[in-house]
Length: 477
Image (cartoon, rainbow, N blue to C red; front, side, top):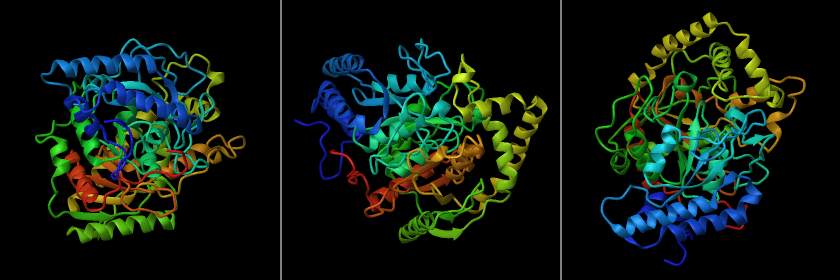
């Protein structure tokens, strides 16, 4: 195999394919890693997807993977496959920047639980990918690391907050990227970059704590549903140190993704959780997806979510979201960006009774919203109600109104955040091709703990309407 990362008629190799190459000796991890490091050197200066690259460490890990493969015996499922970790999550031996000039950038002594699970699965860590400061907004731009650009159009953002991982995978710099999602930060950049991005059920992926009351979780960005499902198997099997967790799946997610789901009742929904207008293009993409689902034999109906009211949701979300940087060890408040300084001060100004009342209200309103999934198996929406923003546009007017960037980010997240609130599994897939234009994904939201159903439906769509051969033309790839 002379070019382990070269593209073929189906597109770049997937993580599962590369793992098979290493396990069978078709290619060594070292040559695969060298191929990706070379691509990063050439292409990433135009994207700024990486804030830290560790080539020597990656080469040592690749050599160790090759030695393990030569010895034979049971192997980790992703032995020797390169991955990058989003720079909001601790990696042993690496500095954690959180894209901020206001934190200490200390070298981490331990991996975060999900990161540890990825390492134990055999992945080779090649570097850390960019995010906005503390992962707050829906673009990947920060004073610390600058702007990350979308490989489909370098004037546009890849979205956020996992935009560094999304840009890297979309440009073929990696087969898979680690990501996290508190209001849509896996699914939004997946949508804008033509990738698969899944937010698993609340508590399914191990973490140190239930960040933002369980709104936030971790996952990956990939080009195929099969990769997403197989890596979710790894994450879901890892020890869970937090207070509560859903039941472990009875059937591996990879198997579920390879099986058709049977005839489902699909609810088409265009209700935003924040004040937002659904762009006509986004609505058209969702309706086209509904037609494709109907062609596959599913029943598609219009379905509202009871109790979903932007005027009710927004002020309560703001109270919760203002605490999002609580786990970041800020040492210089003056060096924190204006929006995050504003949010941190708003958190300090909120008394504990108001905070606890807000969380109770979320839980009580959720009981009403869950009723939508009594009527349908899966909810279908556009992933993003708005088109990919131009680089820098999110910050316009923040001098006059420091909340303005958050309001624009909330608009982008207005169709994804519902799954975070309810703890439901949701996936963005690049089902509908927009010829000559940036991608825009569609979102499938399953009922409680129905990650397998979501993956089965996404896998069926991918087999019927393949997308992995698509790749951006904005870079010399």
